[in-house]
Image (cartoon, rainbow, N blue to C red):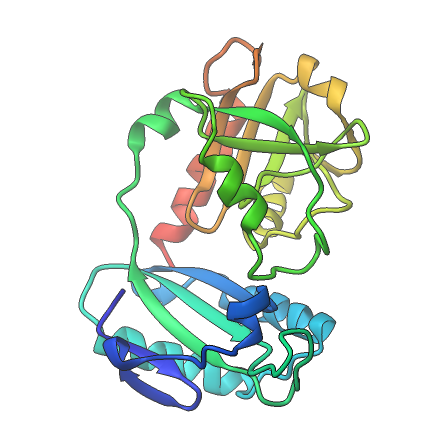
Length: 275
């Protein structure tokens, strides 16, 4: 974490930042968040991330204490005060203090913004692709980016060797990974699930750029369709576009990173280099 952060109206030293021990976000995971990556020290897709933050907060009945213009200004100030090449900007909004741990006043949240250095990218994963393993699960309130990630964090402790992450499915339909959106390629079509998932910001951006080159379908994806997929990939803020070459025991296509996935990665990289 960087030296400075924003907490409840002030930019302060991160080491002195604290929230009350009766905060319902701490007690129950009741809160929402966003993570934004910078390129050339500019937050990428910031407006889309703030749209989702507002939607998530509205769903949980938590009032964001700062308006959008103020949030943008705060982020710019933190970046200007911090040392580093690029950052992950984390925005967190909790329900605030709770007497019983089950009630809260949505007008008195705790709201903070932190910066962290971007982890070094594992280039081998992008060259050779990664493997996922199936887990039957559908997240609660899937369209809301809540603080509660108990299920995947616990599950990751027991993930099989050689697997990068999980792929959720439920009632015979493919959904998403714990922190990523899922895409598959069949013929000339790029296909991604459309219901009971978090609408990833990077997902939306990839749909936009992929649509300029290929036909894109947002629809329900049957589990059995994985068997006939030519290519697969996942998308997320920090992962960007990450190829998937194996899911459980199913080898995707020829087991190599697909050509359409490569084209989407190339287009994505061209855009972020010119932010």
